[in-house]
Structures are given as C-alpha cells and as structure tokens.
Image (cartoon, rainbow over all chains, first blue to last red):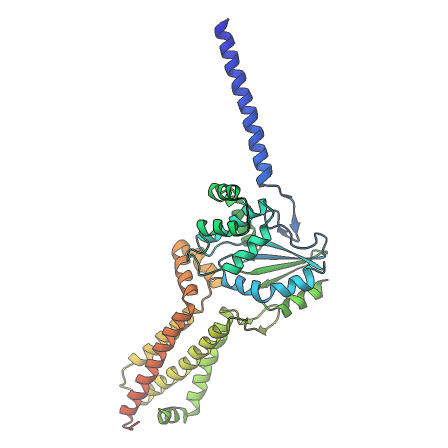
Length: 222
Length: 160
C-alpha cells in the first residue's frame, strides 16, 4: 500500500512538473512571438519583420529589405530616409516595415537578431537607428555580440534580459524567416524596397535611390 | 609626355577608342556602385559621402582609356613591341573595376550565395577596402602610363 502511494505520488509529481513546464514554454513562445502571423503587405509577409513605423492605417507601406552591415543601406538611411519619414510617414501617408536580408557577413544575422531583443523592451527603432549610425566595415567587429550589448547598454535597456536574449539565439529563426521572405520576393541586393498601396499595387525599387525617386513612386501610388 | 599624347591622338581612331573605354568603364562602374540607377527610370545620383568614391571611378576610367588606347597605338605602330605594358593597364583597370563590385548589390549577393563564407570574405574585403584598392589601381595605371610614354619615346626616337 505504501509502495503504491509512493508510485502514485511520483506520477502525480511528474504530471504536475510537465503541466508547469508546458505552461512556461507556451508563455515564452507567446513572449518571443507576440506577432500577427498573418500580417502581409501586398504579397510580402511582414509578420516577422520590424514593428510598423508610422500609422498602421497609412495607405502606402514601404517594405525595406536591408542588412545592418550594408553601406548602401547606410547611405539610404543617412541621405533619403529622413525626407521619406518627414514627408510621408509623419504625415500618415505611408508607413515603413524593415525586413532583414542579413547576408553580408557573420555579424549581420546577429545584429538583426539584436534588434528584436531590443523590440522586446520597446526600443526596436532606437536600436535600428543606432546600428545604422554606428556602422563600420563588414565583420570588422563593430556588430559582434559585445558591441551589440554595448549598444543596448547605451540605450538604457535591461541588460540581463538583453544579454540572455542575445546569448540564447532566441530570434535566429525569425531573422532566417525574414531572409527567406526577402529571397522569395526576389530581393538580391540591399537595400531593396517594395512599395505597396491599399489596392495591393506594388512597385520594387533596388538600391539606395534618392528621395526624388521615392517621391515620384509614392505620389503615383497614393 | 604631351608630345606622346599628341602623337597618339593625332589619329582620331585612338580618340574614339579612348572615349569608348572611358565611357565603357565609367557607366558600368557607376551602375555597380549605385551612382546611376536604371529603374524605375534612369537617374544619376552622388550621395553625400560618395564623392571620393565617384571621383576615383572617374580617374580609373580616364586613365584606363588613356593608357589602353596608347598601348594599342604602340602595338599597332611597332609590331615587335612587348605587350607587357598593355597587361599592366588591363590589370590596373581590372583591379579598379573589382573594387567597385559592391557587396550589397546583386553581384555581391550572387558571389556570397554561390561561394558561401569564402565569397563573403572576398566581397567584404572589396567593400571594406574599396578606396585603397582603387588607389592601387590608379597607381598601377599611372605607372603603366609613364612606362608607355617612355617606351614610345624610345621607340619613336623622340626625346621627351
């Protein structure tokens, strides 16, 4: 009788541990993938991309496929993006989604994953902007794990959370999904943009093109 | 040196050849380096910070046109001339062109996709050292120009 009681208690303990473990796993999945998995813009799945910059209901969406180590993305960020943000995103005419095409070097996917660790703490775009402000040579060490942690520290992020996020490789699959999505859309250079309007009409722009081109394309699609 | 240039380009065919080489290098290099875009319409744009890079492309293309045209003249005029100097010009032009193979563009993407990590290292090298590589190309082309002029002076028995 005593033996049966021990066996029963053991089984009960295992069941309880299993239930607690499954709840905690499901919570961690919800935490890391707090995303609308069906989110698309035109033919592009943006579910795993960045949070939307600008109004969700803007009639135009600009999808940027980029790499944090690409110097042409740096050029676009510093020469064109501000005008697009000022004239189209801040006015509610367009919004922007960044989708990683992190292919240039071994630090590219790490940098992309780090942006999602920052997103967990509500600072995706701040981290994104900091990366494009701090860019140096490809794989020169500017975007290695230590430097990414230093960037997070400078933004005042919770370092315990950020470090565990980076070290666990929590968002590696998300970055890979984005790379696959970019390839599926025929992006073979960074930056590549797909501009989508509310009718589903799409226009692709390749390269760090000047503001005048974006203005012409967006105005023709509104 | 000016005498040699006058001598070679007195024949308009070499002017056409030099201009063709200059344009034939400048336009593709500008497209690869994203100074010229073809879609959705043709537009030229030198972004802030890209001035030095564009200037170096201009110099590499101009020197390539000059050096290669002069070497073609030398080979045509003096059939027994060694072709080494022509090789130097071609080598300099190729190095200059390779530096422009932007890693972010379709060429870099294709190289990385095909050759994996090795392709990544090669394109990263070309991107990280774009300006020094172009300077090396210019130095090679400048030396080839000097050697060609000297060789022409000897072969034509003209004192420069």
